[in-house]
Image (cartoon, rainbow, N blue to C red; front, side, top):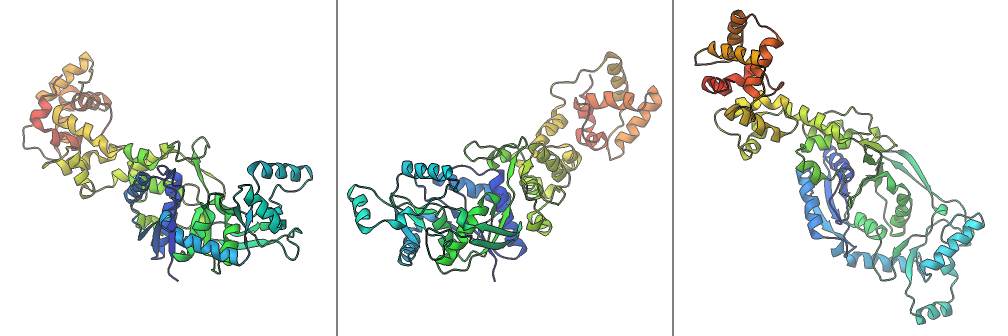
Length: 457
């Protein structure tokens, strides 16, 4: 069997880190099994769906390293859904209901007062032809419910009917269909709710594995029943835990919390996002993984916890630093060039500063420091000013090599008697304007003798 997975967001906003977790779980699963990844847009809500959001989702996925094998739009597939509706009606498992929202709400309240679960009581199945005609005459249009297979002989005599499946994340799962209302598949205006298009698409696109958030566990029981009603074998399901903000709040496309766009604009590397999005809330240690191929090797759906996982953006910077520290110049050459970092010293510069960057864009400030000096000049104590001037008078002649810092400071130490922090800190402040940063032994050859002398306080 060819593994085929899908990621099916609604294009009603920009995806956040929680959506990306689902996309990455699917992509890594397909990568691991040499399968296919289908990008499917649930855009049947024509009023809220926007092509600009679909485009931005594809851009975000590409930025993360996800490149779908196939892209589909549900708004272009209504003929398939119409055919499925006809099939369900013909087999008697899709039935018309005429209740208004107010009537349904009243019935739920009555059932609660009687100690019964507030599920739909299938009253529409009792309607006579005359009653249906009367509703139609009054202008009521029906919505259509799927008859769940949780009754045997009498449709109003309930008995427990369990749907079982082996979840590749959560293990053995069970949903009791008798505890659920028959789901509405088609609204009064003829538009489709999520369930029917999703199942029909999974059948026709030959989706082998459905991996999604655990807020869909109950839906899965209904969908398995619908797969079977349409004469299809259900796919394998996996339901991963959801991500929340660091404070425990849910994520939403509408609020833009932790959107992929905002993380990208904030200078976070895609593999920092992918590493944390996939590994948080699992038994794996959260580490900076350099590529999706490497992450696929670590990825195991069954290692995912059943409880929600908190996504802390502060951890992204830790991972970002680790990734940047190990990136070769070839990996960043073009991006540095866009930032204005280029020329014969660009590679040596990158190797010198990469271990001190939170974000790649931070390299710009170090490039300016090396080329133009501290901006603004650092405040140095009077006694240290005199010391720096004395040290600069001892600066070796060029050409310089990698030992110039060691040779210079040895001469300064001998001439002044200073050592340790008292020696190094004033020189660092004079050269960079900062109390910490890359090794001065690496920076000094890049500044050059003339540039170093120009930093005399």
